[in-house]
Length: 422
Length: 94
Image 1 (cartoon, rainbow over the protein chains, first blue to last red):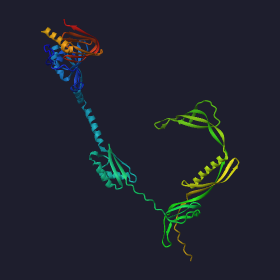
Image 2 (cartoon, one colour):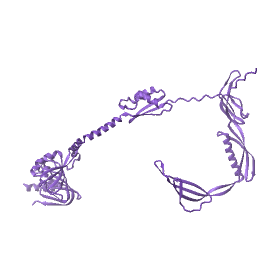
Image 3 (spheres, each protein chain N blue to C red):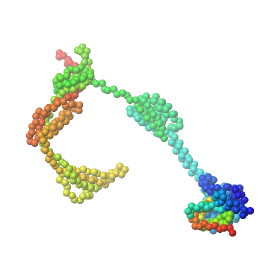
């Protein structure tokens, strides 16, 4: 480089002119002050300060002989010879940055310790177990679980640090509560949650008392499948109501035993159903005309708002919608109601004889199945008689239905024979 | 001697295609609108007020006029000026 020119030589300035970017973090960490400088030769002072490598920024004129600028705290005492030379006077206006912040903190030491103590106290208080929750108990009383937990060391007011490992607690609690098949202990904040899974005990069905299966209705046996007991009837046999189908008494004459008879018995049952169907009927249909009435609800009263005057329909179906706002679960006394009237008109409907018969059969079938039970199957149906009278069709239909006809009848021990008369 | 050096510099600018501000002792000024002004290669502050900044250059003076002028940062050879800059003027050393 052409070092002949003074000023090119970087050694003179002690700092290489390069970046002018300020480092805000460094300024803050070192601490900086805003100073006001009073004096006629401020520019001279500024040039000298800059040459000496003092960081100066935010320079502004405040008055005719007063300027303000920011400098680092550490440079403050380096200004003194410059001030003496230029005859300026300095005054510190503002202090900012970490060192001043520390000083500020020292003044409020009491407050700071208070804050620290508060957080410490919060931490300490949150490191205790303050309540215990037992979940999942059905037959077991939660109290017994809590007692067992206390024996292991999990109780209210215990320091969490002193607790054993959750696995150990679980194992020890399992030994104390044999009814549980699994115990989980978890600590959430200041709450200890003990999850208990009880052993499921197999439910033993109550022993059935000895019984027979008897016929519910008069029927012809279709199928008979005994599971327990002795079959007393055979297929295609006609049985009367109350007749024993599967006997609960097994064994021969010498050795007898009463058991609970079990099995399925299906029989063919005959029903005769009489139905009547009117040939003409009225049906209501919507015409498509609608009226909407708006009401304001005030307490128990409904106030019609709109429309004021309308001709009501001769026949109509009405539906209403209510809107009653509530705030936080409290219903307001004000509300809104919309009633919609849809006009309907009657229409006479004539049925032909075939249609009436089909309808009658349908209703009869439904009726029979209701009587015979859900598993019943209609095997056969026969129209016995059709009669048309007074605008109605009378039908009697014969149904043969396969249905479960077994009914339980307990075997009552025969009362002891009365004392022989003297 | 001085005249020789100047000639040599002008030659370097012409022949080697070097930027003028590097070789010649002139300021390099960057302006961002009328808001900010960045001046390199100055030789010191002669006068500074709210309305005017007068900088010493190797061959004269640079006068920046404007309003609410603030020196955001200053280094021995650089100045970052902010405010509402109205005009820039060179005074050649006679």
